[in-house]
Image (cartoon, rainbow, N blue to C red; front, top):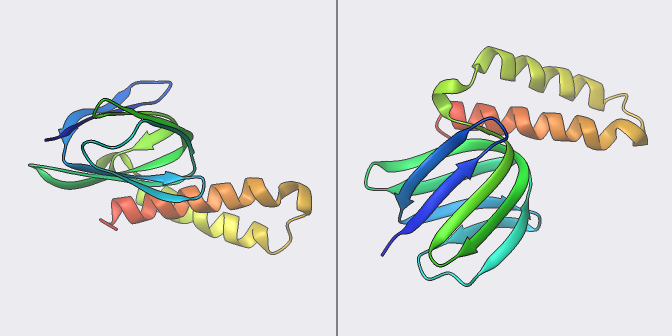
Length: 131
């Protein structure tokens, strides 16, 4: 048995493939999805979406969105989904360093936004470096 995984951003369809397993960053922690999973709709947070198929394990850096699981299909709508080859490591390093520096003097009003940028930079770096 397998799952159909579709990952879509506002710009394009990033993934459309059959997988044995998918792991997504949910609001309350990572969600592991196997064939036969119960129907589910959930918010996604910034993090790493991993999946396994005959071609091995692959991952994407994603930034918030939604997932729907139904009838052995996993449909992901994300604000951003980047494959390792599309990630500019130098830019991600700069983004991470900038966010870490801004956290030192962040106000309550800007804290969540800065943390979000830091989490995305860290996810992008992890995906680019193969976790």
